[in-house]
Image 1 (cartoon, one colour):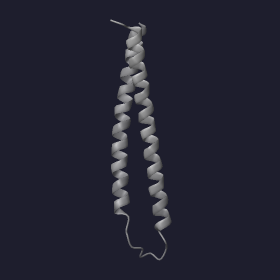
Image 2: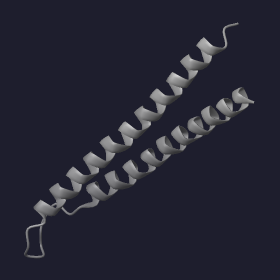
Image 3: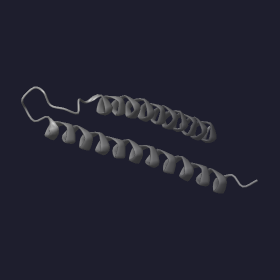
Length: 90
């Protein structure tokens, strides 16, 4: 029973990592398109550069956070795999 529960958790974590990776790809691509779509010249009479820089900085921080979450999940899976190998020597 313990092994079934453990296998289920590992499979759930793998699915989570896959969905997190896909979400990261989709959001990164969408934000890259938004950044590329920002107008280069300012014709509205106000300085849009600080907002552009802040958005780009936010996007970079968000990307780092998503990558960290994925790395943590991958680390968890590798630890579970090692633990499973030591508990179940064949």
